[in-house]
Every structure is written in C-alpha cells, then in structure tokens.
Length: 250
View 1: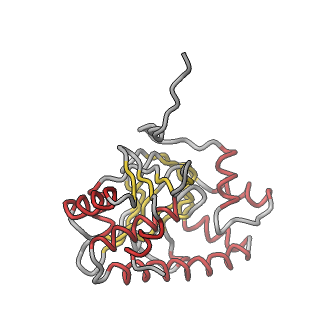
View 2: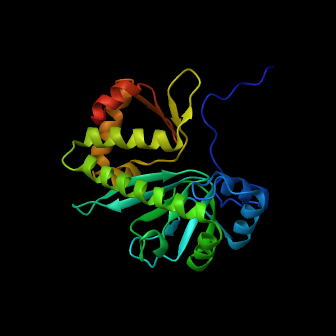
View 3: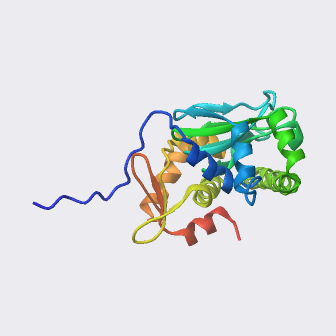
C-alpha cells in the first residue's frame, strides 16, 4: 500500500541545536556585517566566536542587561521584543539564521535595548565586545556595514512602536503576522505563506500588546474568513491582500 503523504508541517525537535564549523562559516558569510569578507577573514572572525545552544523559549539576552555580546544566529528563530508605552511588549523583529541579535557599546548601546527569546531550538555564535572591536580595526568594511545596520534598527524599532500606538487589536495582529511572514515565512504549496514557528496566543498577545483572549478571537475570525489557516505548531497566511488592508499598511 502506498505511503500516505503528510500534508501538515513537521514538528521541530525540542532540544537545542548545535552548529558545526562549516555551518558557522556559512552563516557568518551571510550575516550583514561580515558578508563580502574573504574566506581567510571569515575564518579569523569565526575563531573569535563562541557557540551557544538554546532550547525553545530560552532568553538570549534581556532588556537592561549589560550589552556585552553580539550574537549571529546560526540555526532556529529568535523573537526580539521591546516594551511599548503601555508596558506591553511589541514585536521588533524575528531573526532567522544569518541574522544578528544583541548589541554592544560599539553599536551605540551600553545595555540591551530589547529582549531576545528563542521561538525554536537555536544555535548562536557570540562575539564579545573586545573581539568585535578587534574585527572593526582589522576590517573597515565591517565598520561601514555596522553604520548602515544601526540606522536600520532604529527605523525598525520606531516603526514598530508607531504601528502599535492606537491601532485596533485586529490591526496589530495582522501587522505582526505580516512582520513574521517577512522574517521567517516560507512559500506554501498551493499559495500563501507558511510560518512554521510555534506561536501561542500568549506569544501573539505579548507581541501585539493585547490580551490572549482578544488575540484568540481575532485569530478565530481571520481563520473563519479564510484569511489565515492554523495548526498546532504553524500558521499560514492565505490572503495577503486582506491581511495587509487589515494591518493598514500600504
């Protein structure tokens, strides 16, 4: 008898990930600060890093802590949240492999301006403040990339706070789902975008500054209207056009 083809996404393993050296070199080559460096330069940067493995739901760094390390994500996904004016967290970013997490004094922060928490099992490469300064001295092109990224981070954080201020729960949920789609979305067979990230209603509530009950009602309504589809550990954006209109984004 022919095997039945699985139609729902596979669950991810619960434990931390490891990232062997070939993976570490590959993600450094894709990281915004280090892309374009020679293989020899990437090798030198990699030797300055330390591997750190995380399970789902673990904190990479917390807002207000001394900004002592910059992290390059090698596997998994990490959410970055920041308190809004009403003391609720809003989603600033979702980082995928090759992305950067954390900050340093060299990036303009003496303490971490946000909290980073793993959404899935993850592995990251940490780079200390002293080692990062050495990289900047050795590779001026990295310093130029840092300036561009600092400007991008500031604009992204301000946009997130403006987007949440005064918006309805439905608009905030739609906007957050679209942000996640841009960060970690995968093309879905048959159309739409798949978010294979274990997001609970509590997660979405903390990202949107709403209550879990309000988010649950909105998600149920969006699913009933065919705008999204959901499973135990995944969400699919089916109708991007309607979701964009609900979010109020151009």
